[in-house]
Image (cartoon, rainbow, N blue to C red; front, side):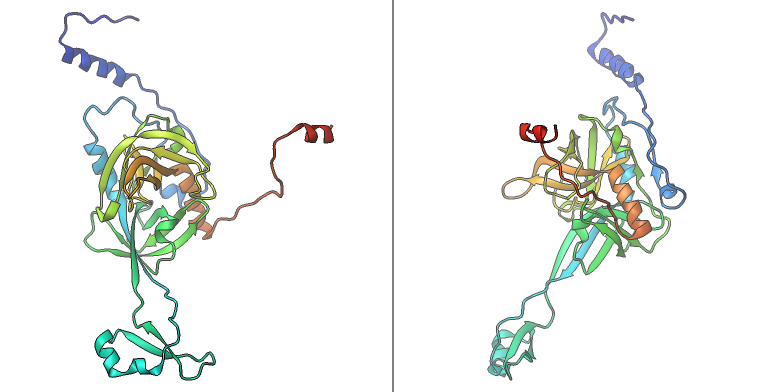
Length: 324
């Protein structure tokens, strides 16, 4: 079939071309492993390829639909400080306190040094961190990165459509894939719609949504730069989506979404620019892998993996001769 367009304004030609491209769409449907009842049935999952017809009208509606399901995570941990060298009792002198303040306490060293004392702060300093997360279920299950909450003494979640923060508990975490699941006591939460990361192609348009540098609900855009990235020393099991959508500290655990607003990855890491900032190389855990890990963490609280006691090696001439 051949279509000729003559003597028409350029804008009209562009419009007709967009309509033709928009009409040529193929929706691929796949089925992942089904599980009986429970967690998987509570997820909103669509098995359709991303809309590849082009960004004709921008993505404002897409963003409005997905942002309520992306949360900001704030953590706090007490810094475990080493006790200082034994100090003499004169440090309890009022003159010392006058110059150095009352923020120190003195503890007897009962390890066999008699009356010698150690000086430590009364209130250990606290280290704050931030990250992002994706709401999986209406009753409060949230997926994020393990490194976002690792070692935290307190975790709080801030929802874009709620007035106060929620304290979160760790349901389970898997350092090997850098996935963790949190739970807040809430109901009726706005959840994210999940896509199928197996349908992604290099060049697909994506959006990154998260809490970079504490700037909650920040949206950046880019494309899928590569698939199946491994050997990055980020986690033990790696199969990352690479993207040039701007990802910065605080984006970790947030959503990488396609142009239909379905979460297809969990933003995890970047190759940093010298001196900090984004270089245009970011990595996200495919949502298919993240959901499988999350499901096991919710049901079992941990990930159990089998292994074989074998090693792989190249077959050289000596081995070939030995094995005949």
